[in-house]
Image 1 (cartoon, one colour):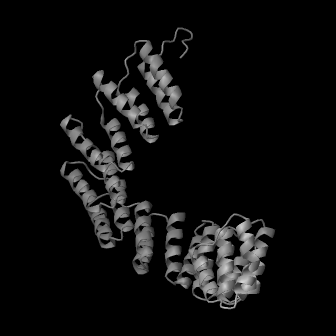
Image 2: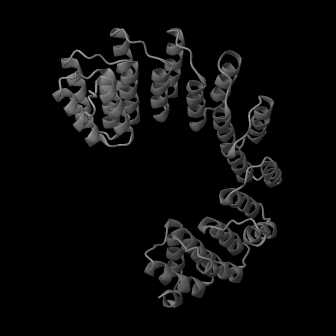
Image 3: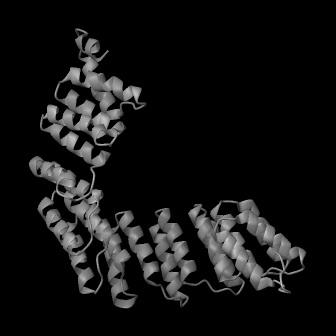
Amino acid sequence: MTEERGFQPNIVTYSTIIDGLCKDKLVSEALNLFSEMIGKGIQPDVVTYTPLIHAMCNSGQWKEVMALLNEMLANNCKLDVVSYTILLDALCKEGRISEAHDIVERMVQHGVQPDTITYSALMDGYCLQGKMDEARKVLDLMIARGCVPNVYSYTIMVNGYCKYKRLDEAMKLFCEMSQNGPVPDSVTYNALINGMSQVGRLSVAQKLFEEIFAHGLVPNMITYTTLLHGLCKHGYIYKALGLFKVMQNSGLKPNIMHYNILIYGLCQVGQLTVARELFCALTFKGLHLHPNVYTYTIMIKALCSEGQLTNAYDLFRKMEVNGCWQDDCSYNTMIRGFLQNNDISGAAKVLPEMVNRGFSANASTATMLVDLLSSDTTGQLIHELV
């Protein structure tokens, strides 16, 4: 660092710039500045070391992390709650949960009290491994030690319970949170709505959606997407269409993902005509949205299921004309559609094209081909496919 106009950088200057460099992932530059600092006789403190430790943890450079920690120890520089928490969080993300738990006890032994962020990181580590009972013990320990959980702490637990389908425990904790803890936010509600939607408890999910408004919160894009997907997945297509209207009226603009969810839901309940109208509306009614490969594949599959092979194949061909190239899923869907409708010649047209583009038959398509070939006693099918 160049000294100009008599300015002599001190530890605060160096630490601030090192922190900025680490945040910009310029770790080599940060280490060079760190070495320059030491060379000028300025002793680094915990604030200097912490961003370097954080950067090394994020990149999985544990050997370098240990070197920095040993250097701190040699210089009698003690870790604070921030540096301990960074180390703990990194260990949790690496799956080294027992080592992370040991850090909490080591903190207490060294007179550093874990804070809400520390305990939350440890809970998240247990949740990532599905060890929900251990995560709950951390929450209880946190409260017992006088550390008040915040909305993030509770949401980690609620999301973990939902992820592993322990929904009654999720609701129990949610009620506990509402009565004694911080006010749930949209992230908490989204986690619960997603959990309930995944297992088909749509009445509970819809009630939670209504509660959002009652608590003065506003559903966001994730909220609508989650509930919309749940309703369509479990066949509540008319409720899904109603929710879609509510979303539009709220000022949020649906994107192609929302249309895909609705088109899929309509196809699942046999409403192919409505699904096609919605598909056509994407480009012909000023929505300024374009079907993506998933949109086309949904429609191709539905048309094939209804025996409308000509329409399905026409749509398959229109994909590239409209600037949407087929992928392995769309090729497999089209080939299976032909095979399911005993149109071997149709499958024979698409199969070599798929292979030439570097795609291959997936397990479902391959099974159908094997079954057809094994039943081909005359060799006619082999001739057509080859």
